[in-house]
Image: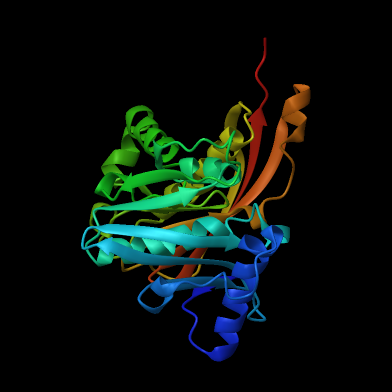
Length: 300
């Protein structure tokens, strides 16, 4: 597992700048020291580290004006790409920007990272001529609104939530919403006030529904990531209730808990997948759901 930290110690700063240089400067034969600039002193830095403290991804936020933030020096360890680490950095820096009054964020990107930022909800505002200047950077912009707090694939998540509310009206009555999606992990929440029983805790059925939709939603988005389609059916679901839930609940499902493969869908066969979701009361796990799903392959 990994966590996002702010580098503070000398050792942490050394790992932070080492990864910056190895990913962003070394491939272009740039010397050590070129990975730093004057804004480092006033910027805010975040780093993803593993259980041993090794740097896996880094990034920096600084302000160009009271309302404009800029993210720079984004870098992920090449061997760990595709694990959602870059999204974790973007999420952390966007949160900082929101808290400090930014109305939008800009990012400069080369061709090889342009698709990533577009998937994070950024819009291309200045397209560089990378034919004549391969190292030129495009500029992207993202307004920070209430509607786009989801860092990765915000349009997909908004569409999915609207589909739930339209086709499963009880989800809107329960107040179920998608809080975050990183490409590898999804978080759903529901207000306790709409799901409270006579014991002033959350209905067991509401907990089950929240956990089920968390897994279902992650599978739905992962199908889209792979350009696959199919009907997702819950074949069996088991849940362990560990204690009453008496605060604002949320549920998380992560791809590292997935068992099974999507590959059969490409051959026109059903995919059998097992996925886990944990339901939290503040920072404590109060229920664990294990769902066995079948993704029905489209039939001609």
